Length: 413
Image 1 (cartoon, rainbow, N blue to C red):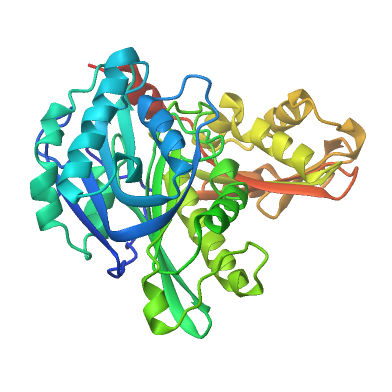
Image 2 (cartoon, helix red, strand yellow):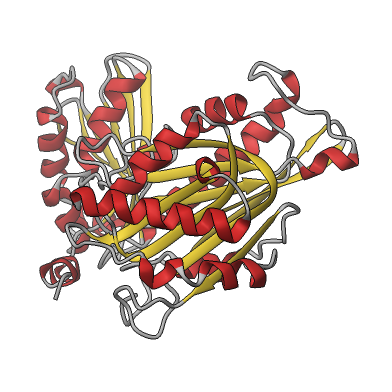
C-alpha cells in the first residue's frame, strides 16, 4: 500500500452486510509487508457452490493451477489468499506450497483438500514460504466472523491504495438475496478472463454450473473491459461462491442457467462486477485520471472492443491524459493500428461532449479551449465513431504518470 491514496478513490466505501454461511479472518504473516495483514481465510460452514475464471496467461501461477483442478469437484469450504508473493514461476516449490496450504486449511476447517481454493498475489519468481501462515489457519478458523468484508479486502492488497468492496441485492422467489464482492489490483492489470484477484459471495441457492455460466458471461463487460497497463497477470483469479443460505427463507434452488428466476440475480451480479472493475481501474498505479472509452459504428462488438482497448492501452493516449492534452491524433493512431476495419474518412472523435474530429479531419468548430477543459476533469469520456456498422463497446482505463514508473521501477527492492 503506497503512502498516498489515489485521487480517484471513492469518497466513501460501501458497507457490506454479513452474509449467512460465510465467515472470514485475516492475519499478519510478514510475507513481504510489515505491520499489515497479508493472509485472508474465508470459511463456508456448509459446502458452497463455486465458479471461477482465471488468467489466460500461458505462465499461470501455482494457485491458479490448483483452483482449476478443484473446480470440477464443484463445492467449496475454504479460500486462502495471501499478498506479497504471487507463488508464480516457482516450479516444484510452488506446487509444494499450494499442497501445504491446502493440507493446513483442510485440517483447520475439517474439509477435503479438493474443497479448498487458493490465491496469491505479489512478487513473481520468489518461492513462497507457506509455513509462515499454514500454522495460523487453525486460529483464524476459530476467530472467523461474518462482519469482516472490509478487513478482508485490505488483507489482499499489494500496491493498491484502497480496498475494493461492493454489495448488491436481488429477489428470487420473493426472497431477498445478497451479493458481496471484494477485489484487488492496481498494476499488471489487463485482465483476460478475470481481474487480478476478486472474490464474490452470495447467500442465494444456485448450483455451480449456473454460477459458472453467469460468471463467464459477467466478466466480459466488466473485468475484461478494464485495463491499467496492458499487462495480463499470471495470477488473475475471480471466484464466485453461493452459500445457499437463502433456501431457509423459501428460495427454491436454481439448477439451470435458462431459469427465468435468475434474471434479477444476473443483473445484480453484472452490476457488482462492473463496480469492482471500475474501482480497480481507478486505483491504477500513479493514476490521476479515469478514461471511459466508447467505440461505436464498428463492424462488430468484438471489433469495437479491440479498437477501444487499443486506445486504452496506448502509452501515448494515456500520457496525453496525464498531461491534460486533448491530443486526438494519438487516438487516430490507436484506431489505425488496432487491426480492425476502419475508414479514415468516416472517423469522428469526441472528448466529453466536444467533437474534435469528424469525417476524417479536424472538426470545423473545434475549440482547443473546450477540449482542454474536458481534459482537466478527473473523469474523461472519450468516444470514437467509425461510421461502418452497429458494433459498440466501452472500456475503462487510467492515465500513465511518472508515479507509475516510480512504483514499478523499484517494486522488488
